[in-house]
Length: 340
Ligand SMILES: Cc1ncc(C[n+]2csc(CCOP(=O)(O)OP(=O)(O)O)c2C)c(N)n1
Image (cartoon, rainbow, N blue to C red; front, side):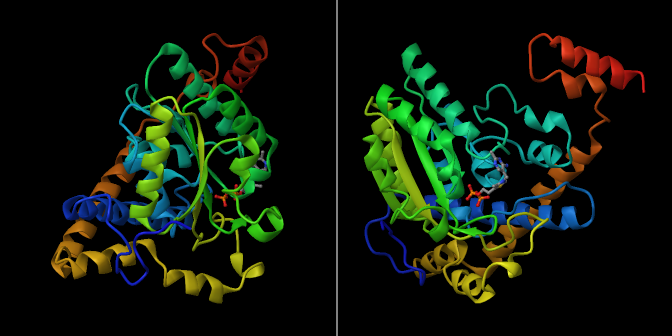
């Protein structure tokens, strides 16, 4: 498994970024965690619908996003808010989406990030299509698709991987292996020794990386993107990480996993190791931490206020996002809803 930063903050090899860039990645992870904690609290207050926390997976998401170009495509899941935000999707729309507001699913036109996929695996196909379209148009954009370990047992994973490999589409498959698909452990999900090795069967490179190591994730994602951008086709990355929280706010992980395991993974916290690294390099101080947390909280609070201040959506907005022109059955449903 490829890694660069040890849990104690010592470094194994040359880092792919400067100290200042590492401070930036750390700041992003702090902001992402602030968002995650805030959303858990909002859901408990009844202000958000079900929420899927990503605590513990910040390095996988921020590291991968940092390797992308602003105009590349991103197709992720309900658990990928940090990846999506770092790729341009505003917090306020992610929050709005979680309140059930359809407008949360429409990012600004210049943001090439799809709304989060709730359908496990379905968006991998979209990412392959986007990448193929870019290749056919002669652009050098790539598409990165992120998904969980459980999603690799979906038919869509096979179809997407096979098509991408056969047509050499510039797609980067990022599997965040966080140990579980709801209550189903990774060891029972697939008997393959690793998820990365599944790449062999499709004829593409596969790499396993420490998903709690932001520098390592950035390095392997950058390599996969460089390869795709210069016409070398798709790759599969398995970022080995752990979901510290529940599957969603509707889940109780105490029923299917030993909480000592979660505690052990807290020792491998992706933020802590970068903090320790920065501290060793003279790039961290308690007042800077405080400043980061204050800034992050302010930004998230502003995003919540903006999402909650959106005027009530109208019925047309609920129906109008799927097709250019409404289909007959959709129009009937709209008419019926309007008459209620
Ligand atoms: C096609 C499909 N089947 C089942 C579900 C219900 N479901 C939601 S999340 C989930 C588990 C996904 O696990 P994994 O891919 O490992 O991602 P994680 O939630 O751990 O990030 C399932 C089965 C769904 N949303 N879509």
